[in-house]
Image (cartoon, rainbow, N blue to C red; front, side, top):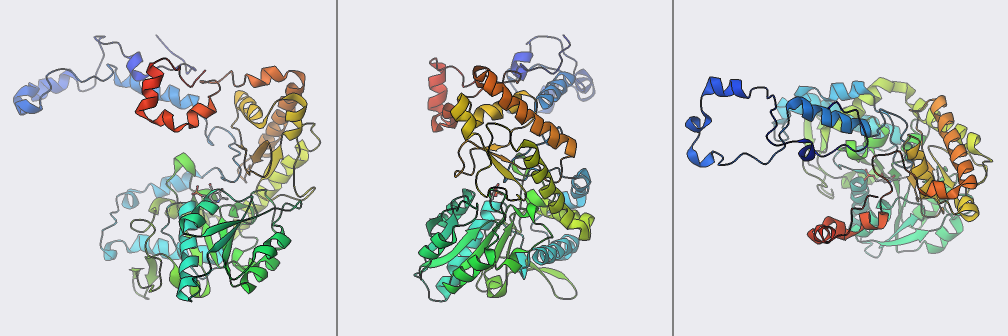
Length: 507
Ligand SMILES: Cc1ncc(COP(=O)(O)O)c(C=O)c1O
């Protein structure tokens, strides 16, 4: 029977009907040409019974996967306004060029003389990125943002140890930071000191001053921060931390909001990581792999991971010569494909790179304007301040008035055919939605999204019970989040329990 993309696509196994005649390309014709397979293969490798795989023709399988693909949602279909994650559209041109077979088939053990082209790309990228963030040198090796952070925290640690300052065991992290910041600091062996955010949405400088001491190893900051607010007192923060003997680490995951406009190096940062898979034309998340390039200035350059790529005036080479290096943080030289995409991205944009940030910031603030004044939605912290790459909304008032929470609103957005933003982050905002349109989205899409928010909230005031049932127009209903997150669901015990009658997590 002809099936349209629908919401109850069966597994291939269910679609298959054993014994049903199917047309196979290469099936009978193959046997005619090569003869009986048993005559060709040793007896012990010939199957005694048919494989337990679905009995379907090629075209049936292709259509199954195409139907599944039509049930999915991605940035090629509509906006993915995930705050902090910068899920922007990545030009297909980069995909095409980076898919070049010369690159794809490279082997990490190839002799340097045979990979001069790609080493040149890496060398130039190191230089361009360093220039863009105001650092002296970059290493392309870390395969993710969190890995760059970990490398940076290790560099801070080794720097202080080399100076005999073993007592510097505290790394300061604001309370709105991405979870990977305190995690990286702790993994590097630091005690994490949380710095509160003031009502202005920026680091509480008095609280910062009160914890600075001879134990301070440094501070990890992202600017603009996860509220989308630029830390306007960053110069002061840098002076205070440096005066106390600490270093400044810049989490570059939010660089999209200031790209080409201001440089972390000029703000006083000593070490920077960049999320190539967010800002520079390579996909983030499931579309990975990523690259968390790490850069440094001054004497900290000697602590970068190895190898970096050098040039002796004639040839490019892998430089293992940094004596104080923290060593490797990943195998080989990093994920080359996203790095090539970043190179191409910068090549395509050239001096216009700042337009990325300008349009992204304009989009955020246009959206804020459209939803300002909608009953039930507020924008906590930094009242009236411009946001950069993202804005964090709160549905606290709506929850109080109607019982509808941030999760319900996200499900209602999905029900209406768009992707929901990041929810419940940062933790300092109750009932949070963190919205980031980036430069990818058109004015029409932003208006459509704002209108969806307005109408969903209106519906919540009229009929909160209906909102609680969302999503109803999707392939699966609301997941039991507790159960889905429970470690048991990943173990044979869970499978055993489900067989005993605990119904699927899906309504
Ligand atoms: C602000 C911030 N810092 C760091 C990271 C970590 O980056 P990654 O996911 O590449 O490890 C993220 C995450 O996506 C982030 O939003």
